[in-house]
Length: 293
Length: 250
Image (cartoon, rainbow over all chains, first blue to last red):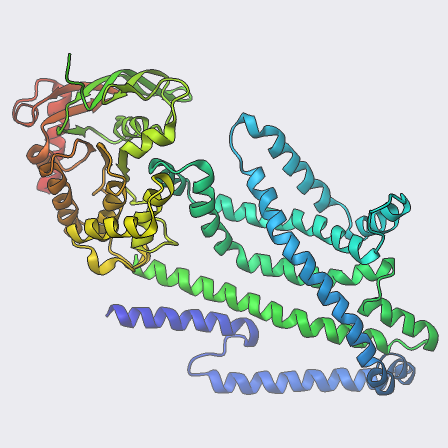
């Protein structure tokens, strides 16, 4: 009978997952539900298309934003520029993950001795979560090269990446910290009771459990970071957004932005779906554990 | 006094905020002795064990393990804890590690054992306690009794000279209690010095060389099990034991 219960529970989980997209469609009424959803979607799309296509400004907007000619002729160039977005994203992410973890660990150090480090970590996280990303990028990318110190990089891409690392590390460190605090104190007690040092306990017992729990929210921040790479274009880096802007300056057509949008979405939507899948898997696993206990 | 006690506690006091939990505990445990701590929940049994393991700093008094004062200032707590094993009510296994990793973690990190040596030793212990087919299993997939036996093996892998057991069967389903008690009996038979906080009175009577009744942070009465369970002197002890016996009758 237990297996029957398990099966029903897992079915319910699957249903709740599906229901977020299609409404309560599972079960006996499933097929009828799908049919209703299809028809209502179709009606909705047709209404929107008819309204938009019959609006007085449509011919101009169609040419200005949805021109197939401009789209196909600029796609390769913008896609090439988009590689810079991906590069910025990847480099920044590789720096953010360890740096944010360091901040989070500093912040969870106990005792009065570590107060200065803890305070530093708190001030850092508060400050960089509070400042608009674009301001940090402007200050660093224009300000630091302006100092004209020899040996200090002047590349806007370099300072753009530094800015993103500073901002996102503040967010990601909070995510890590939530993970660290979610590990029950009895785990630390067990490890310390065996004679492990505080650092060994953190590294081998606390962090592995903490990081595993925060992977879905971390991926959420990845998505935000990928989008925010476009901000580095505002200080002159020739990435997808800035390239689209430059092209539109000479032709007064905005289809280039559609190209950039398509490229961003092609990366971020699969990432979002993957995150949702991980969250759902996590929940199913936890529910399965609950059934075992 | 030429033979030192395995564990000696003198005037131990501990409070959490304004809540006085241990109010002057004196206790001596000889080598190979099994001391059972009995008493109501909140009487201070768990806190006493956590103090002996230095998981809780003490406010006053001294604890000596084999003659060495472990409560003095500047003592290396990690070195002391390696000599004292503790097993908790809620097992506290590491959920992200399998059984073998749970057992070998501390010997490898704290005793600097090589992987192979630590694993060999762990397998011998797991085998001895009937867990050899669970070596690769994760804690989630073990029963409570199996988890608690793994937790005992994990503590034993450090080859402690003293074991502290904190109500290790209290979280278990009744049918799983026996297998854990069996393990503890075997340890006692092997001469392990132990301090056991327990609600299993029959077990305490069987296994203990010495029984202490804790009440409100003090050891109200102590003695050999025959005396403690047969003819307790203090009214509070009688009352407590009566209540336990009645609860079992239901």
